[in-house]
Structures are given as structure tokens and as C-alpha cells.
Length: 444
Image (tube, rainbow, N blue to C red):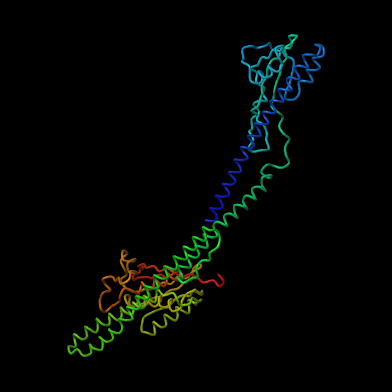
């Protein structure tokens, strides 16, 4: 976004400066043309009146001197032409000279009028648009002379190009656009970072109110939103924890009273149902704890954590194998991250009989893959298994058990740590869970 804002500001300012320069050069060119036309008018009047008062014998010498510059007067054999209408320049000159002189515009067009002009300014026109024409002039004694008005001479070449002269201006404009862009985008980056920190830790300190009034207003609204979200999560977590905790006491009493049931088959069925209810209460507490973010964040050795979790699972009789090393640290809550990994491995062993855990290092992250030997999951149920209390039909037996909260808890914890959980069916069979955790950089 910074680059886009910088380019828009830079291009906008440069375009405005170029338009202003084009208008200024155009106005300067028009003023120069008006001045040149007036100078040509004065010069033509001076040449004609001087030639008129000179004796006829002295005129050839004078005309050789007058046939120079951009306004020229020379002898001609072309008779006066009366068919062409007077031009604006000839009409004005006729008015200044008086009735004793006769002017007749010629169809002859000087070649210099069509030649492109060299200019050191890129916005200046390359064609002279002022007066450029020829006409016959009849003096009082009847002699006809030809008056030519040509474009002014091209300016001498400059040692410095216009682009080089504009370089300091362009650099200052770029610096100004960069400063404005930085001032504009920096508060947005701070809000974006605050939103990211809020996703990782709901108890993250609020945004400091600073900057312009609009930025302070947006920051205050963000802090208010964070406080409301924290309050809603706390209320829901406390309610869920209180309900599941209070259910443990009557469930324990029910188990004690079931011991007095005389029918052994009925007693076993009731005990199984009660065990399922107690498991649901336990996982309900785990779900409440997974939304609790009061545990302190700290740097963790991912390889040591995985080795500990897999070793505990093996000691508990589960078939778990760990391969690979990440050799990196992650920032997280130790108990929460451990609960996430345990849930994923338990889920693989419960429905797939074993768990093959593979970890590998990526750019800025580590990828943990947990593959089981189960039948996999249909593609249309990949997203739904993360919903609370959702279980696919094949897992609703008493043997497999499960309340449908294990993957929900794992995903909640992963998202709080900026990690991502994905499911896929392996090509060789079984379900593969992929957990990608970001790397922790000290001092970042």
C-alpha cells in the first residue's frame, strides 16, 4: 500500500507541475509572439519610411543593409498584387504608414516559416505561430519593394538540458511525496499490527492514541471494540466453565448411586452413558480453557515440545512416531500449544489407530504433518469437523467415543498463535492434518 500511495502522490504532483509548466510556457510563448509582432511592425515601418526618403541612387546600398535580420526589405520585379486580401499585419502596417504607401500581400510563403524550431523547453511549440509573411510595398515615387517578416532566430544551445535543470525539483517532489505517504500510511500500519496482535492475544495492550484527530478517533474505536470482544469472550468462557464445572458434582453422585443398581447389564449401560457425559464435561472445560488467553506467552523449542508430546503418547500405549526436526523457536503459551498437539495426535490414534508425526522447516515457519491410518474424511466434511460437537457418522459409536470438540479446541489454540490447521486425505490412504506454526525471532 505504501508504494501505491507514494506513486499516486508522486505522479499526481508531477502531472500537476507538468500541466502548470505547459500553461506557463504557452502563455510565455504567446507573449513573446505578441512582442515579436510589435517589434516587426516597428522595424518594418522604420525600414519603409527610411527607404522612401532616401534618393533613388542611394537606395540599393540601403536595401543591401536592410536585407538582413528577421524583417527584410529588398528590391523586387514582382508587380503589385491586388487580388489577395490584406492580412492582420499588413492592415496594421498600412494604417501606421498612411495613404501614401500601398501594401499588397503576396502568395509567396517564406520557407523559414515551415521549418521546425529547436527549443530547450520540452513544453514549447516547435513551430513559430507569429507573423511570418511577405508583401509588396509601393513607395511615394512608385518603386515597389518586397517586405519579408521571418521567424526569430533559434536560441543558442544551452549547456544544461531542461531535464537536468528540473532534477532538483523532481527530487524535492519525490521527497515530499514520500514524507506525505509515510505520514498517511504509518497510522494504518499501526492499526493493522494492532489487529494482528489482537488476533493473537485478546489481552494485548490497547493502541496508543496519537496522531491526527481522525487517527485518534479510529484508534479509540479500535480499543473500544477490543474491550467489548474481550468482555464477550470472558463472559462466554466463564459461563461455559461454570456450567461444566458445576455438572461434575451431580455426575459424581450419579456414579456413586449407580453402584447400588442390582441389574448388572443396566448398571453397565448407565455407567457407560455417565462416562460419556463426564467426557463431554471434561472436553467442555478444555474448550473453555482454549479460549482463555491469560497464560503468559514465551519462547518455546518446537522440537523439544514435539518430542515430549510424542514420548508421553508412546508411554501411554499409543502408536506414535516422530520424524524430522524444525530447529526453531515459536512464541506461544506452553499449556495451550501442548493441548493443541495432544488433541491432534489423540484424534489420529483414536480414528486411525496410529499417528506418524513429521516436522520440517519452512521459510519463517515450521510444518507439522500428522498422518493416521483411518479411512479419511469426505471432502464436503473437511470444514465441518472443526465445528463444535460435530462428528461424522462413523465416529458415533461407543468404541470410538468423542464429543466433536477435539479439533475445535486445536483450531482455537492454533489461531490464537497465528498458526493454521488444514486437513487432507493422503494419497496412500489415511487423514493427514497439517499444522503450520510461525517462527519466533528474538527482538522482533
